[in-house]
Structures are given as C-alpha cells and as structure tokens.
Amino acid sequence: MTTFRFVVAVMPRAGILDPQGRAVEGSLPHLQATEVHDVRVGRRIELAVDAADGGSARSIVDRLAAELFANPLIEAWRVEPLEEPVA
Amino acid sequence: MRVGVVVFPGSNCDRDALHAVELAGGEPVALWHEEPDLHGAQVVILPGGFAYGDYLRAGVLARFSPVMSAVRDHAARGGLVLGICNGFQVLAEAGLVPGALLRNASLRFEHRWVRLTVERTDTPFTRAVPPGMTLRLPVAHGEGNFFLPEDQLDALEARRGVVFRYAAPEGNPNGSARDIAGVIDARGTVCGLMPHPERAAEPLLGSADGLLLMRSLVGSGLASAAA
Image 1 (cartoon, rainbow over the protein chains, first blue to last red):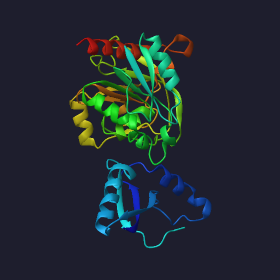
Image 2 (image 1 turned 135 degrees about the vertical axis):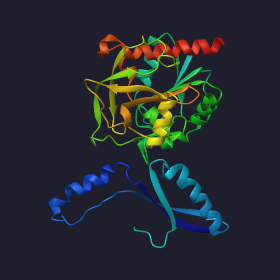
Image 3 (image 1 turned 90 degrees about the vertical axis):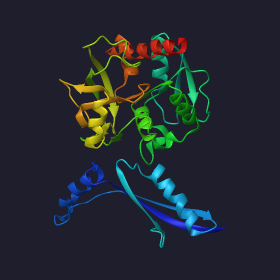
Image 4 (image 1 turned 45 degrees about the vertical axis):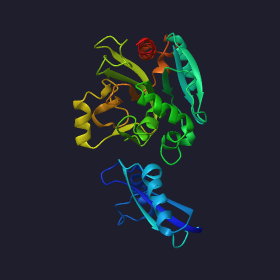
C-alpha cells in the first residue's frame, strides 16, 4: 500500500450564484483594488488515500468528488495530485 | 399512525415537528440518525435545523447518515417522506426530490412570515388544504434559493412537480426560481418545502395553517397503511 495525496478544487458553475465571490468583490474598493474583477470563491479539499496504485486511489477520489465534495447540479470540480500542501 | 421525525446532530425543529404531529392526531416517534431503523413509522419527516453543522453543503453530510438508508428504502417502497427546510436540503442532496438550494439571493438569513399558494391539493401532503387557500407560514433559512436549469424547471412544471409557490404580498424571500417554495418527486410520495408548517401549527404561534399540512400527512399515512 502506498499513500497518495490529492487536491479537489470545487467551484460554482458558471451562472450559479456565488455570494462569497460577490461579497469579496464588493470589498475591493476599500483596498483600492478597483482593477480586480471576476472574483469567484470555491472550495479546496486535500486528502490522502492508501491504495495499491495511483489509478485506484484516483478512482476513489473521483467517486467522492462527484458524490460528496461537489453537487454536480451547481458545482464543477477538478481532481489533481497534491504536489505541495498550502499549509 | 406513527410518524417518525429524524433527529440529526444539529436538527433544531425536531421537537416542534413531533409536537405538530401530535396536534394533527398522529403518533410521533423520534428517529436517531445513527440507526438505520424507522421503528414502525409509516411516514417520515426530515426536520429543519443545521444537520451536521451544514458543513461542506447544507444537507450533504446528513444524506449519508445510517437513518437515510432506511428513509431511502422507505421512499423506494412508496412510503411518504416530508422534508422541511434543512430536511428539504437533505432530500435535494440525496436526489430524492429535484433541485438544489442555493444561498439566498439577499445573501442574508431570511427569517419571516411568507404567503404560499398551494399549486396542488391532490397530494398526500396537501389534501387537507381547501383548494384556493393561501397559507401563511414562516421561513428561516440562509440557503433556500431553489435552483434547477431552465429545461429541468420546464420538465418539473410539466409533470406538476411544484406544490408550493411564494405569493404576494410578502413574495419570494430568497430568489427561488419561479417562486418555488416546495416540490414533489415524480411518484408523488416525497415532498420538500422551505417554509415551516410545524412552526405554525396552532393559533398561539401566529398561524395554524401548517396544521393543514400535518393533518394531510397523518391522514395520508392512515390511508396508505389501510391500502
């Protein structure tokens, strides 16, 4: 068994209300950052999987992404190997 | 007629729902989320609250709790299930009713009285409502903004899947598509709505309109048990 680490990035689909993105964008004038736009806020999930190989680890994460981490009706996601944890 | 009310960690309308079931003449029974057992309930209510803290997305973690496998089996057998507020979010995440509940368009928690038109009084959830009557019920939610892509909204309307709509004078509190406040599944046995009938089940609470929905449910449960 090897431990494989992944990151799942989840974002609201285009056209879906993104209240966090809107709220953040609304605060930008207070930071004199008026040239910034199209702010969107999603979710980043890091996880580790113990599996025999990378392919089977990946398929577990793909299943969880579609069933748990994202709601396919309103969110899109991408699964990638975790190169470097943020923290 | 036994009506089960699921208690998730973070449910906060379970006691109100149990009380309202009793007012409507049913026998209330609390169902613990860790047990995949309905304890003989012929009807199941998923109450309001913040199940599992609403972490990740409202309703999604509750969807995978042990009790929900029993609720899913119950629904698959044609058993009645009503999801109220957070319970509606759980049903939507579980795919037992269509749609998703987004953050309110106001970006605020909306806690107020609303008016509802009842689009159908031929469902097990609304049969005690006199046709044409408008209901006055409270809402209390941050994510009640009903969403479906336009083509799926058309399909939902075509099969008469919309049961409740927000109406004047208070209007739509959360930005829901087509003022939708509650929907029913294609089979007509699983229903979700954002407003709280259990919080308006006796005149002391400011409205007893919600009791009509609870009475519908108890009466329908009796009818389905007899069938």
